[in-house]
Length: 472
Image (tube, rainbow, N blue to C red; front, side, top):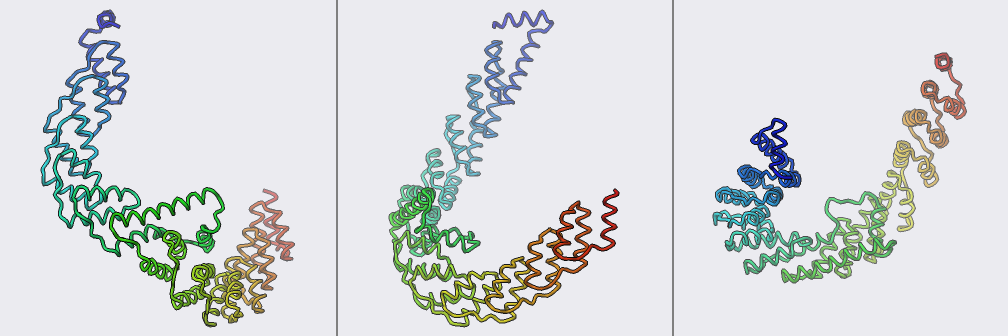
């Protein structure tokens, strides 16, 4: 559409040329502010009215200050107007980018403007040192390419850089390490202990992650032997390949091998800390057979028995091949722990391991019964009674508190089971309160169940509540 025709149409509507051009410029501004650059381009083609160059130059300046590089490029493409930026402004932005360590922004700004950075050499060297300490050698390289300033780094800073790179060896650390060597020509001087620690930390389960149950221990311990799905197999083998590669990479970069002695020492530490999953993983990666002192293993057996951690004990026995020789005192303490924690299947396992019969005191058994009542574990009460022959003597208050909860929750099976093992009947007050609550809750079917279970007849007050319910 020709501009003359648009102007003629506008004039016939009482709109002057200047007013029309001003309105179109306002529309352009709105399109730019909203990022609608395609609409801006279309309107320009439609009207033939050019966008104000002053406005575009101001937008370029704003884009630079706000680091909106994509908007800058889009605006340039939409308008075809070349940016005329103040060099002082661009150099100021370069300086700001370096101070804030936004080196990617610096590179983008340089590509966009074509202006070479003129930065303080001291500032650049200061940032080189910071990037080396952080192990950010790719960023250093970009800054060097942008400025042309050669890094001047002290040996102390470079060695700290190597330490940082090795800490991140599983991600970008290898490339960063090699860049640092290439830039400085300084050889790494890393301690053997440090390299060993990095390797062991990489192999082992992340610190702070714990196994909540013995079931989790069992799952991870058996992964090498019982890989049930292709996905698990792929993940496990991929993990091992990465760690095999890591050992070789550390040797290539640092010249330090993961010695067998260091691995044996680590095995001993992992046994002391009961981290047998990590021990299994370390053995898989290094292929070094554990050679643990019998004293250490027997001490750990005794500790694990006292704690009732029998699955871990079995794992340790499988790893070491050392048969447990545990004192009777430790075994009896283990029985007490298993009883108190409801681990009666562990109690049986402990007998199979040691062939020492449990001798639980009445106090331990009573304490265990109280624990089972609080946990609503009636089966454990029965089992412990069968094992020990000691009849449950549980405080009536504790039992009545459970009955109150069972009545409220309609847990009649638990109520019946607890009554059978303790011989204690629910109090009349609890039952009568249950009747009233069932009426209020419109649970009359529970009303009859409770009556049948306890044999307690509803009181006159309960029937009055029932009448109130029926006549409302």
